[in-house]
Image (cartoon, rainbow, N blue to C red; front, side):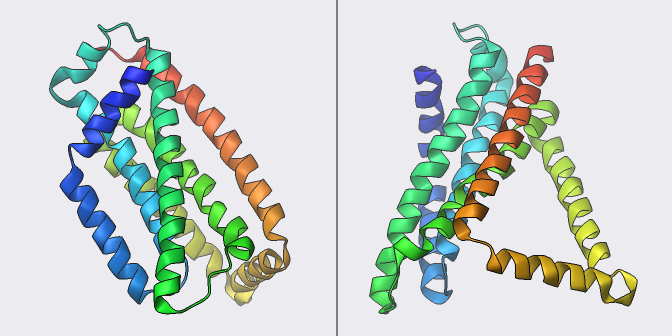
Amino acid sequence: MRGLIEKDLRLMFHRKQTLVIFLVLAVVMSLSVDGAFIVGYLTMLSAIVAISTLSYDEYDNGMAFLMTLPVDRKTYVSEKYLFCLLISAVSWVAAVVLYSVIGMIRGSSVDLAEELPSLFAILPMMFIIAAVMLPVQLKYGGEKSRIVLFVVFGIVAAGALAASRIPGGKGENLIASLASKLDSTSPALILVCVIAACALITCASYLWSVSIMRKKEF
């Protein structure tokens, strides 16, 4: 497991120029955009970069070579989920620090004690996205997985749009009602619900990924 994590870290830092560009863009956008945009942006980018190590493993029959090492398929899948979690968590912490520093530079007060529940909710939400992307990429590979994810998110977006266009304004009323309930709900309760959903989705995703990996031939 430790060797796999080191391998993925080396693969990530091999793209250090891209990472630096992402960081510079994040700083520039955070100076021009109000709110905690920087936290979600950096966490999401880091999760995507962590997941992209799968493509490097599959390149030039690399997966077949990895499976000749003293690493079983379940350990490989476990490492990918752990690696995504670690990278997302480290990026989230760095983004929160950057968000606070930029707030001080701009002269706007940042009350982390008040904003922390909503900021922390970004982390499990991003990991839910990673839990969806990991098994899809394991099953379909780098190129096909992009098409599959595009179709899935397109269906979700189309469903949300269709719900908002329900005749009689019922869809808009439903969305407004849900938004109102969320605003009146305790941030701590929302955070607990998000973490619970993340845990359930991640468990299902992990089991699916292990099943996919065991059936793959290299």
